Amino acid sequence: MRKVIASVFTTLDGVMDNPQDWSFSHVSDGYLRYARDQLFAADALLMGRVTYEGFAGSWPSRTGDEFSDRINSMPKYVASTTLGSVTWTNSRLLAGDLADAVRALKQQPGGDLLMYGCGPVAKTLAAHGLLDEVRLWVHPVVLGTGSGPFTGWPQTQLAHVATHPLDKGVLILSYAPSTVSQP
Image (cartoon, rainbow, N blue to C red; front, side):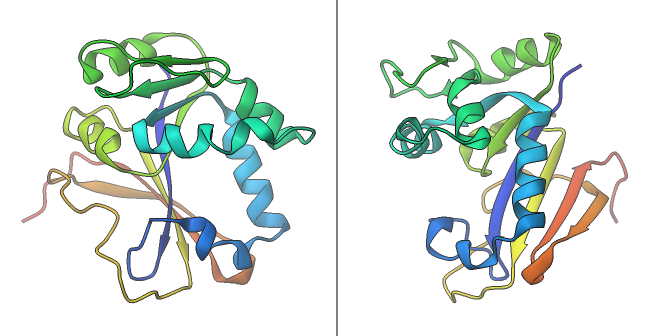
């Protein structure tokens, strides 16, 4: 069964928005290697409208490197109730109930379904037990405006599965749903 993995950039104070404004100074060879390995372990992207619009507005114009070529060529599943169509190569809107659509995708053979961010789509998947792993890329930055990446999520117990320290102070903390109840 395929896994749904949410890869989330965050600051120490929980800001996830506009990572292009605060994450680039932390990029290193190890950072890029992990990002590449994560992308190539997946064979499809899963995203909501906001992520789709942001990515579709920038990635199609990038070509000529393995990361851009991979992200542009792979299947992209878009969850949206407001978009009428999607135009980015290999993109398709998920029809009907999101949980049912993702459940069906997970049953298909293939690699991971990778999500960038943990907005409304990830929250819905977590509520239905369909999110298999969350990878928090914690950047050593405090912007003073954060509210946390999981604001509004249902109560979700997670178990730590891995820590990947990268150069320049970034930690990737990986968690999976846990059946352990907390007092």
